Amino acid sequence: MNNLFRQMLICEKKIHQIKLDSIQDNFNQNEWIIMNSLYEVQVEKVLENDAMKHPGVRCLAEMMQCTPPMISKILRGLEKKDMITRSMDQQDKRNVQVTLTEFGKEKVKEGRIVLAAYTDQIVKRFGEEKLGQIIDFMNEFYEVSKEVMNDMNTENN
Image (cartoon, rainbow, N blue to C red; front, side, top):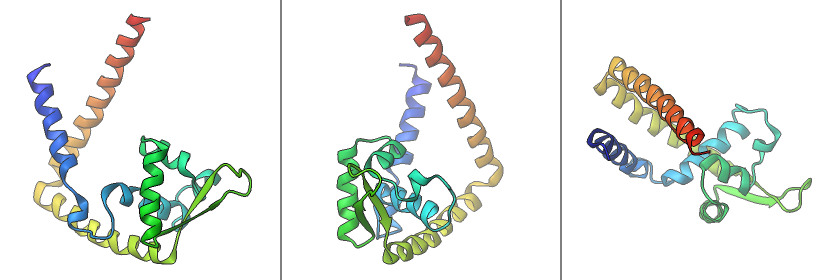
């Protein structure tokens, strides 16, 4: 493997090792992603997609790019913490709908305040210009990576 690429992967791994639950004690990272997503669609009405208003396990698994059993485990933990409720989907009895509780909504609001302070400090210390450059480079890297993968898939077919 190319040494520069290996160094980039190591940096990415370090970033993923930063655990947000060290500054927000209500949720781990996976729980936060689910809770925040539910908050966006159920409280802020960011998405007017009916499937996301009360998403089920399959929908959340696709969003998080993980398996339904992993999502079920996360949801059980959130349910025990009284952050969510799960109920049978009336249109599709095979699906379980997930809804934030009032307690869950309050905890997301609190978490967003802590996360905003955290991200504001990162931007302040790192600098908007440098952060913008990183974002531009990451987007460009993504596009190049996607092109290379498509090219390689085309060659192999």
